[in-house]
Image (cartoon, rainbow, N blue to C red; front, side, top):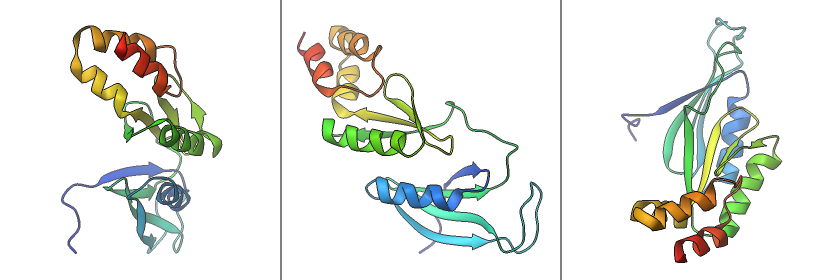
Length: 160
């Protein structure tokens, strides 16, 4: 199969393979497809024979993890947004990320132990925001104080 025309490249210090394996175990439609060793030493402290890149998918999105060293850090300027269908799926994904050395943030955002940002977003919230007007305003106000999104609270806000 030919490589994807567009692939997300994610820079890791040294744990791209561990991250890719975690994503493959945690998110549906995710897998590790290849692991490549460095053919020689490289800048940033990389050594010949160590894992250099990992090819994987996250929820159907093709990615390459690059073990490039510690010089670049992640920020909230990039995140994966994962749509969930109910509270059980929201809880499972959120708890997997946060419980594996990650940290909570606001409004459905959390960060994994490698510094990658995730938005675990129930469809009820995105559907409410898409409606606009008072429904969106109520859903937005309900969401603002939340860390992990409470589906029942969003549904209540949508109903008014």
